[in-house]
Length: 375
Image (cartoon, rainbow, N blue to C red; front, side, top):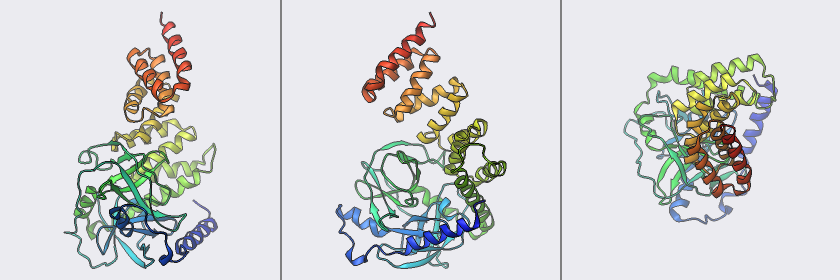
């Protein structure tokens, strides 16, 4: 586990950063966006947990939605509103699998009929969240939707987008071009970010009950311990300590959290334990089959293991979702050549001529040599 002194130091830093005012709220820079977007700034709050600063989205005067991985097993939170007000909030236990949690400012609130309105997504989308650097709410650059899986079949699936966000934005609001609230930011790798559709908030509300309290906090404990061990493993370059490896294997698997399962797979892959990486990443794809981040991570594991028949369908899917990704194109060339797949090679080279012309000559040479060796 993390060193106690280090954990205390982090808590102090987080506390200080969270409460330092951004100059004075009366002097905040005027919002430069459309009024509908600017109004959404007041719908976002900063959330301080014992180990992090995150974001939350108000769905009414008393309820805030954020991520389940933000809440972990903590029983109360400090909430900072856009106007500088500070209040306490408390999690409401539920048993729905999406990475969402509801916080209440009033423990006596009845949320059984507090449903949110959802609508079709119009145009591009953007994140509005608490920015740790500016210490205030911020509207980020918009982006397009890359993929979106059926949430009725896959309740842990996400909307995948290249809309911009930063660390600490988890739980922030995601809106479309008309200002409609369409989702809650969950995670990302800096290039492709993941959003939970707003309609799933209603499923969480339907499945909220004090009867779920014990299991809710038990799962939250697994989430927290998984995150702690993943954080410790981040600074290890090789030879992961057996205890940490076993903790990740245990806590992350039992977290039932798509994001953490994904991160566990990526961690084991980075450290060379490909069998464990494969187990976690294959599980992640069963939860969200159209996740580009999971697809590329698992494709790399299959590639290293030389399981190219397993890798091929993943690459074909990625070529449709992220055809501009140079790593996907490079893997596609190698898989097509080694498996002597003419249709796939033609497809990859055509995409490369559009998105990565500099690498095209070498790719063509590789394909030509690969098919010559079959003659």
